[in-house]
Length: 385
Ligand SMILES: Cc1cc2nc3c(=O)[nH]c(=O)nc-3n(C[C@H](O)[C@H](O)[C@H](O)COP(=O)(O)OP(=O)(O)OC[C@H]3O[C@@H](n4cnc5c(N)ncnc54)[C@H](O)[C@@H]3O)c2cc1C
Image 1 (cartoon, rainbow, N blue to C red):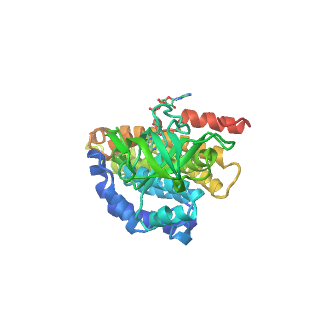
Image 2: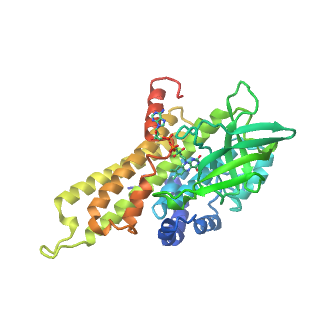
Image 3: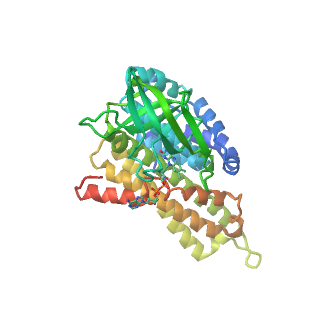
C-alpha cells in the first residue's frame, strides 16, 4: 500500500538503499553487542541524509514531519537502533533550526548538513522521569557565559554526538516561561558520562546518563530566548520526537509482519504438504495484522501532513500517532512471534529482536498514558499541562 506521499518517493529510495546495503547487514551485531551504529551514521552522511531538517541554503534537505516519518520507518525496517539514533539526531537538529541565530547556523546546522556533526536531545532527568518537559538542571549566568549543573538520564547517542540539546531551568525569572534550552558541545569541560544503559531492546542506542558539572556554555549557545519553553517542548520537541518514534515503531511492525509472511509461506507440513499460509486461521490473522499496521501508518502520515501544513489540528493527531504506532508495534511483534513459533523464539532471532525493540514504546516518554491524557485535554479545550 502506497501511503508515503508521492513527492517523498525519490528521497525514500535513498534511505532504502542505505537501509538495505548498510543497516540490515549490521543490525544483528548492533543488537547483540549493544553497539552504537557508527557505520549507519557514516553511510547516512555519505548519502547526504544527515541534514533532513536543515534549510537548503545551508546545504540541508529542508524537509519536515512527513519526511521524518518516512525516514525512520524505512531505517527501522532494517535496524531499529539506527532509526532511533538517527531520529534523535533529526529532532535535535530541528530544535536548533527552529530559532537558530546566524552563528548557530554556521557552527551547527551547516556541519550537520555536511554530515560532519551529530546532535541529540538530553532532556530526561531522574527526578521527573516520564515528565521530560520538566528540568531541574540549573542554568546560571556567569559574565558573558552560562554555567550548567545537573544530571540527565537516557541520552540516546550518548557520548557519540558532537552536541547535546540540554533543557534547563531559566537563568532568570521572566514572563516567557520557567525553562530554557542550550547547546552543549561534547568537548565542554565538566561533562561526564555515567554507566551505559543495557536495554532489553533498541540496544544500539547508547542511551546513557550525562552529568554536567558547572559546565561553561557560551551565551551564543542558548536556543531561543530565556524561558522559551513552549516552542522547544510542545511546538518543536514533542511533534518531531513523536513523529520520529511513530515512524520507528511502524517500521519495526512492518519488518515483523514481512518476516512472518515469509516464514508462513516457507514453513510446510509433511502430512498435508501445505504451508502455514494455507491455514484459514492464519489467513484471518494476517489480514487483521496488516490492517493494524496500515491504520497506524496512515495516522502517522496524516498527522505529519497536518504538521507540515501548520494546521491547528495537528497536535492531537501527532500525540495520538505515537500511541497508535507504539501499541500496534507491541501487538504485531507479539502476534507474529506466535505465528512464527519456535523458529522465532530464539534469543538471536530477528523476530525476537523486533519484539524487544517494540517494547521500548510503552516505556519511552511521553508514554501512551500521558499522550492520551494530553490528546483528551486538547479536544476538550483544556490546557495541555
Ligand atoms: C530506549 C530509550 C531511549 C531514550 N532516549 C532518550 C533521549 O535521547 N533523550 C531523553 O531526554 N530521554 C530519553 N529517554 C528517556 C525517556 O523518554 C523517559 O524519560 C524515560 O523512559 C522515563 O523513565 P522513568 O523510568 O523515569 O519513568 P517514570 O516517570 O518512573 O514512569 C513510569 C511509568 O509511570 C507513568 N507515569 C508517570 N507519571 C504519571 C502520572 N502522573 N500519571 C500517570 N502515569 C504516570 C509513566 O507513563 C510510566 O509508564 C529514553 C528512554 C528509553 C527507554
